[in-house]
Each structure stands twice: as C-alpha cells, then as structure tokens.
Length: 265
Image (cartoon, rainbow, N blue to C red; front, side, top):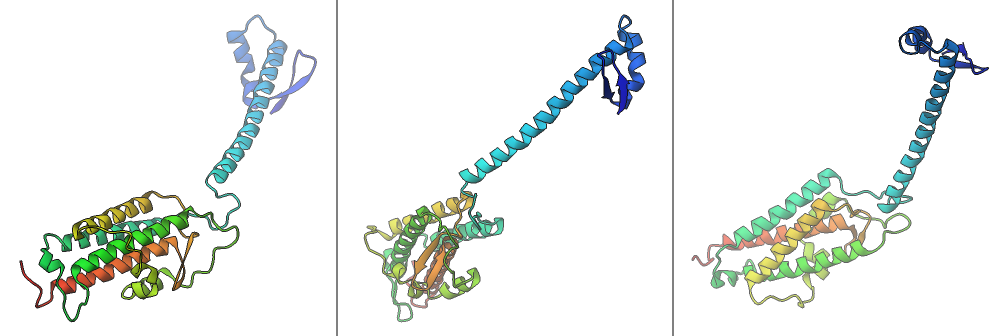
C-alpha cells in the first residue's frame, strides 16, 4: 500500500499494483479525466469494497457460530457430556451379529416336523419348539425394555456405573444369560403364538427391526441404562446380552439336532 494524493482533498492508501498501473489505465480508458479525479474515485471504490468485505466476514463468523449452536441444541449435544452415538466399529459389529444370529437360527429350523420340534432327551430337557418359544418371548420382552429405556431422558449428571465391559458381559451371558437376567426367562406369556413357525417369525421380525435401528440410529445407546439382576447395563450392552442369549439357545438347538436319538425325517 502507498499513499496517493487525490483530487478529493485528502490522501488515501491504494494497493501498490493499482498505483503502478494507474497511468496506463487512464490513457487507455479515461482520456478525459485527470489522474487526481480517477484516483479519488478509485480510492472511494476501494474503501467501499474493503469495508463490505470486512463486514461480510464478521457477519459470516457470527452466523456460523449461531448455526453451530443451533445444531448442538437440536441434537441435544449442548451442555451434555459424553453424548455421542455409536462408533462405526460398534455399529458394524452389532448389526452384523444381529443379522447373523437371525439367519443362522431360521436356517437351522427349516422344514422341521412336529415330531422333531417336540423331541426331548435326557441331556436336553427343552425341546427345539420350547427353545423357539422361549427365544421369541425373551426377545420381545428385552426389546420392549430397550425401547422404554431409550425413551427416558438422559441423566443430567454422569450415567450410573456399569460394572461390566462389553467383553465381560458377553462372556457372562454366553451360557447363563437367563440365570443372570431372570426377567428374560420368566417373561410374561402374554406374548403367545399358536405355532412355533409364528413364534420364529416374531423372533425374525424383532431381530430385523433391531438391526435396522442400530444401523440408522443417532441416539446415544451408551448413556441410556437398564437395570438388571446382574447390575446396570447400557442399551448397547443389552443388545449384546440378547445376542449372547440367542446364541446360547442356538447352540442348544444344534446339539439337539445332532443327538443320536433325534428323529430323522
């Protein structure tokens, strides 16, 4: 920037490149104007544009701040600690396992006869049909527990203590889920189906809806907590419990299918 005496009765600062090329500009485009007149006009235009740009940048900064604050409030993130959605790894793992357990269970029970569904052995007191009914009832009950917990507002302070890591909880419930979570095993039989096929379909639909929910949700499953007989678990961990529980019963069904006395079709 260099000072330039204008015909406006004042001195102004113009960019160096404008001052250097001003004579050429005057000769080519404004032959009837004096250099002082043109310099005055250019300085005024320059000041107008400079002030406009500065004001625009100030307004843009304020607007961006307001937009960010509005988004934080709308999403419930403002002033809330640890309010985050699931990580990509958590989401991918849970959705994959929900689909896998659903598909493995339904494919294992394809075209079983009533005799096969009702088979009992000394090693397995529950029949395959009874496993199906139990799974359908448990899945329905725990899914309702999950939905109710997610509808409750987040705690204002820190979430209640969770005694188990995800791995510890899966290990704990892999073979004894119904013992540590008796409300699952003793769920109300208000959920009833006239056939094992319909009970299995109920299980399949519930699992499908759970997979869709976990894949698409932006809600904070980690800060919503469910109380169980084994202690507090967050809603993501409750899904892991449901996975472990169904995997346990799937393993029992496979053992029944492989039993030496299992009726062959």
